[in-house]
Amino acid sequence: MDSGSILVVGVCAPERRRYAQRLAELTERRVVGATGGRRHGQGLVLDHATADAPRGRAVVIDAATDVDAAHLAGAEIDGVPLFGIICVVDAAHLLDDLASDEALVAGAAHGDDRGDTGAWARQAAALIELADVVAFVGWEVCDTPTLSLLMSLASHLSPMARIRLSRQLSDDLRALGDAVSDGAGRYERAGWVRALDQKHDPYMTDRRVTTFRYEQLRPFHPRRLVRSLNEIDSRRWGTVIRSMGFCRLATRPTLLARWEQAGSAMWMDPIPPDDSLSAIGQEIAITGWDLDVRAVVALLDDAALTDDEFAAGPEAWRAYDDPLPQWVAWEAKERD
Image 1 (cartoon, rainbow, N blue to C red):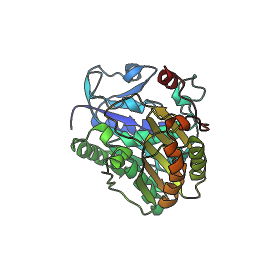
Image 2: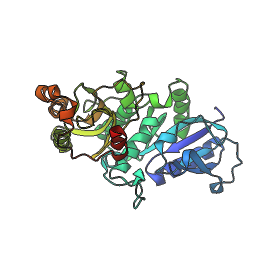
Image 3: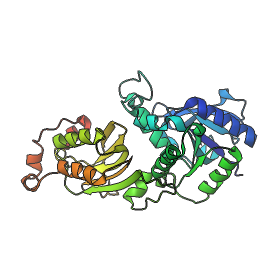
Image 4: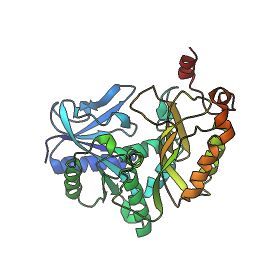
């Protein structure tokens, strides 16, 4: 096996820690804890005090539940190449994790997005999206239809990952080697990226699970968008568990926004102007189960500007009712 370190992630800490310890024993390595994120700057921070592990040696890294998923793609950690990422998932809790409205860190300081409503669900999805192997543990308590749903959801979130009911860690390790040898970039693995690129091809499927790409050239009317999102969140049309992509709001016509939804939580954040992003309206990848796709598309289309509204132009759009959180810094910059 490659001499690089193995990163073990997952929101269920007891299961993740047990898995990391067993993997370390199998590979004759030490387990080293890790934190990371904006409070530390970019990259993981290894806690060598958690193990008698010499620096510069390959280890099994037990990443904290709240590690910043955006900083897990580095080629090296403490000067050692990263071999691959295994996301440990407690099968019995996955649906609850993906739908949770809990914060990732209770009482987080203002401005720390780990304290956001729904941050737990966002983390559960994001860690699966970046993984090379998704290892289900505790799956024995689930019936076959439930396991099919769970494994398909994981595969839709991370189509290039190997999705496994973990039995023998040696088999998980072989799957990790197969996954990392395909040469795909870390962020190319995420289901939403592949859906927007029209390359979404999950290996594990279930008739109840769907991922589709929503496109709409016209900006959203913010008030109607809130109404549509509330209707979608009612689950009358199935359960949207994850959506990611790009959007534009009519009231903020010069700014492209990053759209992110997990469970019942939604984030829209402005993106700095960048010619590499070509989205001119809405491009959103949507994943869920028991979805009435036509109904969800119709609800989103209802939030787009009508012919008369579109013809009125940006100056008229700015006056529309906008109940969404403001982007104070960016909007001030746009006015200057």
